Every structure is written in structure tokens, then in C-alpha cells.
Image 1 (cartoon, rainbow, N blue to C red):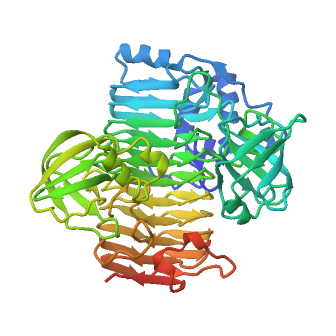
Image 2 (image 1 turned 90 degrees about the vertical axis):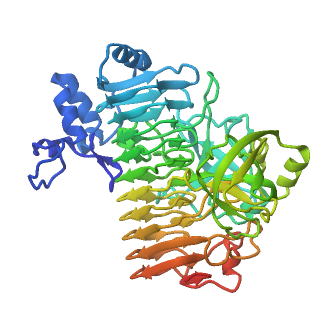
Image 3 (image 1 turned 120 degrees about the vertical axis):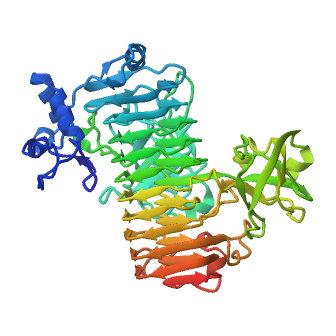
Length: 603
């Protein structure tokens, strides 16, 4: 399959047949690696191959009416097939083409563990997950390539309904389920609304903590929080999208989850739905995501007839990397219509409880990911960045005390995170004095925040939150197209609230196009957690922002604070005067008013 990033679809097979390389027309004739659709055509044979190839193309006449031409999924032991080929010593495993309905084992549909120097070629194959839990888990693998796979869920991890009535105070919605979608259940806690005409998010509000009441006639009443309801702009007739869970085997979140691996390559993977995050990697180094797409499935390629096309792709972040020591590379990827950020790269902040001399007592966020020899960044509760230090010794110091956890609970950390974080204490020694470090300061390894990353030539947006959210340094955000993100399209900022690190030094943001955006354009900033002050100059170091185009959205179109070594060149910025930020979105930087371009505490 060749994914057409602009159209959110697969290329027409008939056009591709005209090119011997298997690439879309027009072709310049230059030698190149065959595209996945070309490989798929080579692997398929006879009537079956033609059938599947057409089913996965965007050949309009074939899908002009209903979906009878999409082949049904057939039960397939994907885990057993791969295990057998690994045991046989294969270095390239070719998954048979077709739509494969997989039953999960141990709350995941496929587990790849301890594999080395292996290619899994899945072009022409679709993994249909039968429960709304983990599609693929990758653990302790090295130089593993997964190529060409389509991933979808049946049943879907979300549902859709039409709004038939809205209460006067806007806290109650009456919903009528749309044919082709299952009824929401107890796990449905988040609601987004879409304009049925434009198929875009309505307004700038996502509703969390909703309560459902099922009526005898099959309708559903949604009760939502008063504050967000008052700012909502949904209409009768809009499409409500709610998370939905079907997990008889037990819940395990995220579609593709990789951990403790090196040199992973995901190439031409299309993810059409998924619980929580799409691609989440933790403690992985040097991953590459090439031509991958997280997008809503086009109606003519859907496996079910529905009364309304899918409004959502996955339920939360599309691509998310945590604690990488060699940052990931996202090249020519697509992330659209997902339920949170499109691409996020960060590490873990830990919590300083006490300081003396060259030593800190630190509560680990969860696992302690800092190492002897690491350079650390220190982020105080008033928003300042202290001098970097190098770790010379690190030893466990037992459980956190009740007093320490009580104090941490006063610092503005997200409540649900705090309930499972900051449980274990460590004693950390440095090569310089740290005795003046205030309690409540956050600490992170500058070597484990995803630095060295690249986000290049991607198409992102049409989501409820940020397009790109980066906390890593030595990175390149270049040549991307972003549109329709409700929050900042490109945001560079540490977050005390989520204990997500760190400070992005030596960063390039260049040649990006932001158009028809719905939030601020490019934002580089850090404030105190209580939003009292903007951090002083030097929180970030050496950031280049050049040759970007920003259009639409509310002011500011470009906001930069707290940078020592800022290059701001040739950026073209315009905003939509009819749009405005909500009051709670305006931080300390905006208290004196909002402007088109805002540069504060930077030089």
C-alpha cells in the first residue's frame, strides 16, 4: 500500500501499475526502492491478489456505494505464524496478505520480544484486533523492522452518536446512536463533538469526566462538567465521539507499544484506530518512523457500513516517545484526527525532596531512569532553570515518607499521576554543590529526554491538542505541515504538571507551514507551575526559528520566552482576528495583552 498523505487514503492501483518502480505518477524515472504497493503487487498472484490489491487501493468506482468489496477478516494465528518463522531462523518474515482477525493472548494481539536483526514484511496485510486493547508489544528488540502493516479494531475503541438535544445550561446532551457504532459503556469518559458538514472538531473544548445515563429507548444522556459546558459551542445535529471499551481479556492500553529496544524501524504502517496512544515508545533508542500514518479510515475502505464516517482515528496521542537516549526520527508521517497530541517527545522529571552539600534526596517519578555520568537539568517551582550538574553516584534510599508525598501533593502535579508516582527515594551525588536547591525542584537527565530527534516532512493536525509537543534538545523540526490543531501547533515547553522533561537546547524549527490553525502557532515557553511568572532568560539555550509560515488561529502566532541565544528570522506570521484564546489558556506571558509576535525574556 502506498499511503497518500495529502488525501488520507491509498493510491490508486491503476496509476501505480503504470510505473515500473511502483511509485505514484508522475515518475521521474530515477532509481529508487520499490514502494510498498509495488511489493504488494509482486507478492500477490491471480484473482486473490487482484482482489486484495483493489480492496486496499482508492479506486473510486469499486467503493462508490457500500463496503461489500472490502473482504471480511478471517481468523489467523499471527503470533504462532511469526513464532514458527523465528524458530526456523528466518531473517525476513513475510506475513500473508489479507485481513487477519486476531484473538489476543495475555491482553495483547502480538508480542515481539528479544528479536534481533529481523524484518517483518506485512505489505498487503491488515491486523484486525478483536478487543480494544494492545495491538502490538515490542520488548527488548534490536534492529527490528516492521513494514507495510495496516492496523484496525473491530469493534472500534470509540463510538459516535448524533446530538438530538442540549439543555439550556449546556451540561446535558441527548444522544442518538448512529447506525454502525456500538453503544457507549462505563469506560466512556471523554467526549468530543464534530461538525457533520465539515467533519472537523466543533469549537475548542474537549469534555472529560462525563457521566452517561442510558434510556429505555436506546438513547443516551450525557452529563458533563459545568465549566467546560459553558464554553462549548456544539449544536443539535453535531456528532459526539466517545471512547468505548471492549476488553474481556483485560485492559492493556495503546495500539503499538515498544520498550527497552534499539534501532526499531516502522515503515509504511497505517493505524486507523486504537485505544489511548497510537505508537508509544519508552526507553527506546534510535527509532525511525518512515511514512507511517495515524488517520481515520476513509469510508470507502471501512469494513462496516456506517451511518456516518469515522470522525476519529485513535483515542489519544498519535506518536509518543519517552526517555530516549538517542531521539526518534519521524519522517513523512501523518497524524490526524487523533484524540490528543500528534507527536510528543519527552523524558521524566523526578522530584527533589531535600538538598545538602553535593547531594540531593530525590523521589523517582516511577522508574529511576537517570544514571551515573548523566548531565541533569533542574527546574525550580518558580519556573527557573538552575545550573546543570553531572551525577557521580546514585543509590536507592527506600520508600518516600508520608510527609514527602504530602508536600509533593501541594506542588500542582496531576492528581492521578501523583497517586502512582513519587513512591521511591534515591540519594544522588553530583560533581558540584547543589545544597541550595529548593525542595520541590524537578530534576531530569538531559541524556534521556529524546535529544537528537528529527520531525521532518510530516503532515499533522486536526486534533484536540498540540500538533508537536517537544521537550528534547539537539533536534530538528523541519518542513512539516500542520493544520487544525486546537492548541499550539508547535509547542516547546517542559511540564511540571505531568512531570515531563526537559529543556530543549540547540533546537531548530524551520521551514514549517502552519495553516488554518485553531490555537497559537509556534510557542517556546516555560512558566512557574502556578503561572505566576515567565521564566527568566536562559531556561532554553540556542534555539533557531526561521522561515516558517503561520496563518490562522488566535494571537500570538509566534511566542518565545526564556531563551538565551535566540535566532528569529524570516518567519511570516498572520492570525485570524475572529479567533481568541480561552482565558485559562493565557499564561503569565499574556497578562499584559496579546500580540501577533511576542518575544519575552530572551536574547
